[in-house]
Amino acid sequence: MTLTSAGSYLFVIIYSCARRDHPLPGALRFGGLVLEFTLDTRRFEADLRRLEQRQMPQAIAEALTNAAKDVLEHVHGNMEVVFDRPVKFTKNAFMVWRAKPSNLVASVIERPSVGKNHYLKVQERGGPRPQTGFEKLLGSRLAYAGILRTVIPGDNAKLDEFGNWPYYGERNKALSVLQAQRDPLANETARSKKRAKGRASYFVPKHGLPPGIYRRKPRAARGAIEILAIFSDKVPVYQPRLGFFDGAQARFDEVIGPRLTQAIDKALATAR
Image 1: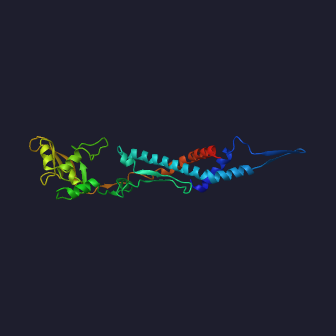
Image 2 (image 1 turned 180 degrees about the horizontal axis):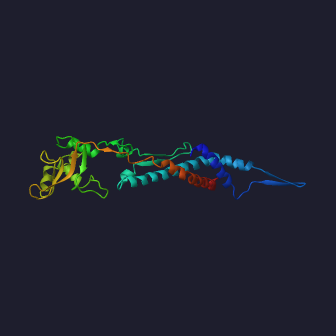
Image 3 (image 1 turned 180 degrees about the vertical axis):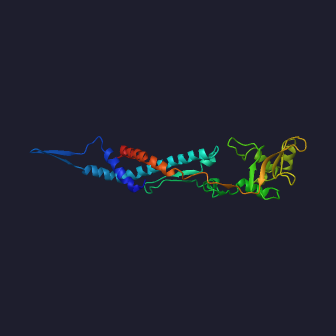
């Protein structure tokens, strides 16, 4: 709904709602067999101008902001459909930029903290996925001679309830053992390695095995190993999936009317 088309809509609401308990002054005159009716609208027009100048910009800004929040909920609902158990980080990628009386525009935008290579961008437009921070870290820190483009969790990786290999726990231990932590002080030392004797160890094979991160079971016989992460030199290519714009206009058109009525009623109740 444009602001222009909203103008007549707002006037109808104001005219029907304003001064419900205070009728406009009128007059009835008798003359022969004729009834004449007049209405003094000066006070109403003054109240209307005052309402338009003081309350209406704030009411419209509030209605736009609440409608944008409704659209954001619609986007979150789409995420639940197209993604498998989207994590909080994914759903929090967008926010509402509030409308103001001086700027009657509300927006659903990416949070400032979202990077330019956030994975939702490629989920929206499709195409090759940029490397994640974890993939870049392994590519720069591991003693691995091959080309590392993508890291895929293996069947033996300990995944969280969302199906991801979380940075804490086992993945963090593997990075420490492999001397691949972002902070060198977090890497395993000779002393900590000695203390960890008998526990599971981690390694990247130089040859003979598919490239990846492996775990050797504690005190296991030679060859008792499990793959935790698979290295690939292929760049994953996505089809457009998110549908950020799908249904957004229809949802806005659906809620803006009730949101305007709600905001105007509030403005009328607080008008002085």
